[in-house]
Figure 1: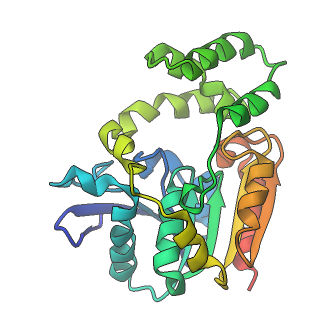
Figure 2 (figure 1 turned 180 degrees about the vertical axis):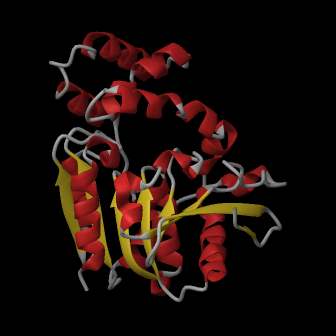
Amino acid sequence: MPTLTAVDGTELAYHEVGEGEPLLCLPGGPMRASAYLGDLGGLSKRRRLVLPDLRGTGDSQIPADPATYRCDRQVDDVEALRECLGLDRVDLLTHSAGGDLALLYAARHPERIRTLTLVTARARALGVDFAEEHRREAAALRAAEPWFPAAYAAYEAVWAGSTSDADWDAIGPFFYGRWDAAAQAHAASEVAQCNDEAGERYAGAGAFEPAAARAALAEWDARVLVLAGELDSGPLPRVAADIARLFPRGELVVQPGAGHYPWLDDPQHFVRTVETFLDRR
């Protein structure tokens, strides 16, 4: 397992899967070990996936200063990894809460990114967030599912402020296009892979300055793919369209029948979409 040392001395681990041109993949969670990304539905057959464990997650060291879990403080870790890999420019893919880290990295180092792929990704760094009404709108699409009544009741409890593990576990089906055995196993791995303290600090006060980030990327010439799931609430497809419009060369793809983890819901569709985007010069 390869490692590198961050500027503050924290030892960071990363994993490589597959062969070919590298694709740097930032995990979400927030602050979930990169293992949950797997091989991104078989994308490793086309690209060498570089999967970092963010500080304090997976095989990476817990930092001496927990304040460095804040998203903007981790931009230097991404740059250190790029330098470690010896790459002048990177193709960067990110998922979920990792979108904020990728966008802050792009705002600070726009010249280091060839392409950016945002997979069901957040964009709080640009002033776009998801609201409870978005969650309700997406949840309503699943009303015919057999698991819906119990899951929706748990969702209501979560929106009301419940911190019960049982309630959070029960809403899992809303994040997957199919609540099958693979989805259930994937959901069950989340707790062990997440650093809760780090996750709470990730989007802390001062992490984002949306106006500055938007200004930095207003004339950015990199191609950006915003990949949304048809059934996902974070972001809804129409919110993902708003995110794509923030980039001069942004484009939107909505994967049919997909939730928050589109590489699990339809691996072939996901890989084909990402591969087509990356291979287009």
